[in-house]
Length: 76
View (cartoon, rainbow, N blue to C red):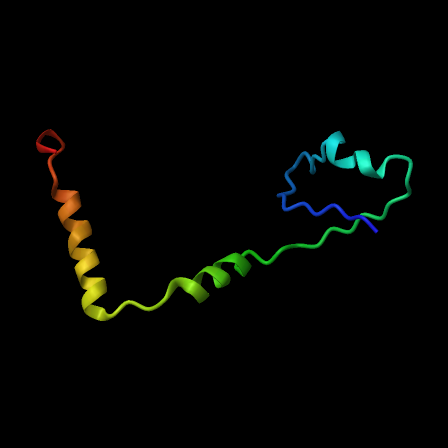
């Protein structure tokens, strides 16, 4: 059995599925099921691999960011 998976937002106008994606289902009876995706699903995967910064490392990064904000573009 073939399937078509879309990761799209449904707008006020609905959802657009191109004819190219639907070609393989031409002249077939199909069932369409729409399931809402959990918005935080990808965020959880990312955080799983993000790792942990030590306090002194995070403070150093914050200091570096602040230093970058102080750079005068003319002197860059």
